[in-house]
Image (tube, rainbow, N blue to C red; front, side):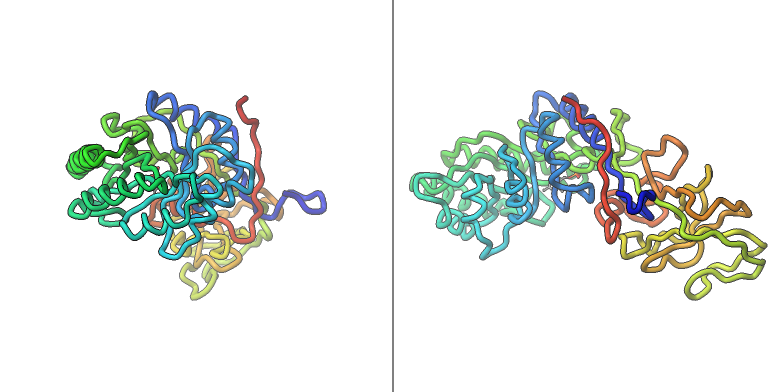
Length: 380
Ligand SMILES: *Cc1c(COP(=O)(O)O)cnc(C)c1O
């Protein structure tokens, strides 16, 4: 986005062509399994509605989100395809999501009752029963599973619900050989068998996220739920084979100021960094209010005038300082915090490693006052 004809001070640029490419690539990799494009948390910071539209156009059969509000926002944007939301809380308005033809998840008999009570007469709610295969997060434990299935079957007979899926989530998909994966798969297969013995007829089973979808073909079943890989980021850095994913997010802008400082100049709050020799500094007008982690210093780098420049001193709320090492680019010169890495700029993965986190957290937190701009042609 520009104001007054100038390039933005700082902006998030999302390459929709990269997302379309990643969706098509993942579909090829997982076929004949279907692809659920996970667009929760505002599309991992890339824009939920835009990513969803591109993912559908590129052939994603399903969309997945966490909250009912996210599902309703997708429907309000005009999306009409299969859509699952999996994180309702007691008392949430199931009536709205069911009326919007959204599939819902159930973890407990009480939740099934709430769903059944909210279903319109003659229109059974489509339910995905979740088995906790070991993550100890959402889902029924194996000890609760038979009761959940029996209760679901009773509600099917009453016409209020239809169970269309059994699903679960993995503990260690980023370590494809981790024994937890196969242990969870065993519990999952058992849970599916129990559900079928209870008289439930499943349309799909889904267990794999991005890492497992790519690296554990045995866990794909009929449907995989891919989030991070849609955005071109590696779900298991150093482990995932290269399938040609393209990172979609770039954070860029223009330096607010360039200045020379003498040896001994302390930089930013607390003078956590003191210039050992005369140098030049660039002022980057984004800070932790934009989701730039404070832990980015020391360690992270910003691309300015053809080189990677280290962040110096504390990251502030609105700004951070980079060491230009004596170079004096014009104020207003372009900076790139991170991008796909094609021109030498740091990547989201570089930032994640500098900060001591995962690439998911870097992109999902990015925002604040930065506008988002979309580029790239969508594939027909
Ligand atoms: C976020 C999420 C996913 C997507 O995981 P990725 O690792 O980003 O592919 C899949 N399933 C569930 C239940 C999730 O919460």
